Image (cartoon, rainbow, N blue to C red):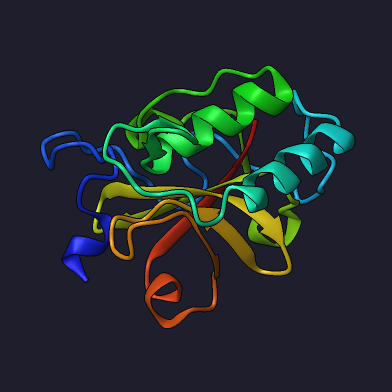
Amino acid sequence: MALLLAGCASPPPSQRGWQAYPASVGEVAPPSAELPSRLTPELAGDVTLYAVGLVGTPYRYGGNTPESGFDCSGLISHVYRSRAGVVPPRTVAKLQFWGAPVAGEAIRSGDVVLFAQRDTVTHAGIYVGEGRFVHAPSTGGEVRLESLNNKYWAAQRVAFRRP
């Protein structure tokens, strides 16, 4: 399983900073799904549909286009830039502070899903609804749609951010 996330633009172990939800000190996520957002519900829906449409695109470390392939943060960057005109950070280490923290019960499609092992953010994806997310893992070699309830992902520390 260690190879699953290898090359996902994750920070070196020396760059700590992952904190369980909320994602940064002093931040408290409102319990409501009506958090301030740069994305209207329509844009969030467009982000979601486009992300799902990229399922099957090859994985490539450092990749950030459908033609070249994607790593996890490259996928997120491409989708938000292309469909919402929003420019997210290019690494998972920086994505953990992007947007606003969202409580698990308040997530909506278009939110960013962050995974951590121990105290280090290791992977990210785009939440698409019904407990599923789109991401670009190295294992399997392509962008996938998976369930947060999958045994592997359910064992990870997870946080959500709304752009």
